[in-house]
Image (cartoon, rainbow, N blue to C red; front, side, top):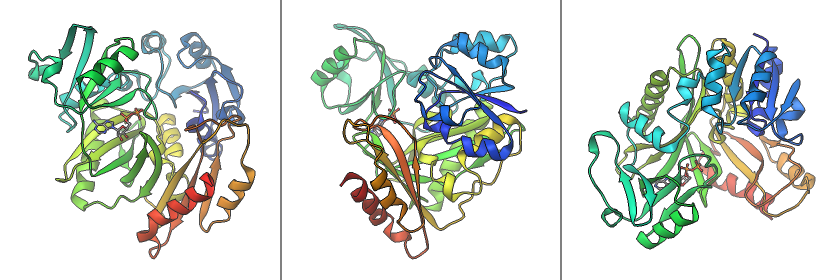
Length: 388
Ligand code: ADP
């Protein structure tokens, strides 16, 4: 096993670069743009759209296995390649239930994982069809809904794009209209106490490792910072580890999966979303864990044993460096100031254009036991340097 094909060339693929080198693997990347971050670490690149399966067929001719950093793929077209013997890890059967948010929720229901109530909305104005999953199915109309609800596009959502918190039936109609009355998912709004996330990996041999549970803090539905470990009870950690193991074993997954969760005021854990790939909430692992999520992904897909996910410090703060203007600035001076903070690592994705909300890089600060209670203050210091 030498050459790994990666569908997607963003920062998640770029961050596999260091691990690939140390494991003696080469990465061949399928990505649309020459300026995408992972082009710089690829031993070869196929410039094509993520869902271009003809390009993936070409990728397959020069790789031993193909993995994903982006799930906006054309599953049916890839299934044909799999039938012809192309090896995908995670296997396409593990991706299939996850790519559409409604189907993902139905799958989580089937395997008994806790999550918000949900239904699908389709049809046309005046003839809306609201479908409840499986055994709960009963006729329901828009006026029966308990607001607020959360409306989500079923595919291609990221960083909160495609997710809308809806206060009443008028805004539901308006938002749905703006989305061209496409089929969407409606979810119960969870007034969560905390948002949590966990990274888990499953090897070809079926071993599962689970990273420390983290708290993620979102603003306008975009992740701003991650605190590690989350300040939660051991019982909640146990619940979450169980969820992660059940999910990865049910899927017969091979690779790294990111699981986002809500913690309610009564201590209940609900799954928000599963991503079949490395995830922003696991970036801290690059600087703070025995094995980063990126190395773990490569280990799993190459058929190697998994490494330790344990933290080698007391705690960590990870802050996303989001664009706040339209510019081509590389913010060298600000990055230098951030690098000068103690125990701090700056990861700059090398994107050539900044725009508001775009993930340009991230900063990780390792905390000693005395600093652990000041995690929020450390995050604030980083943000005040970045957004000043
Ligand atoms: P994306 O796939 O774009 O990341 P998510 O489904 O994770 O979208 O939603 C983005 C954010 O919206 C979440 O992190 C959370 O803050 C909020 N959110 C999503 N679903 C719900 C829900 N059912 N109840 C309350 N808030 C939600």
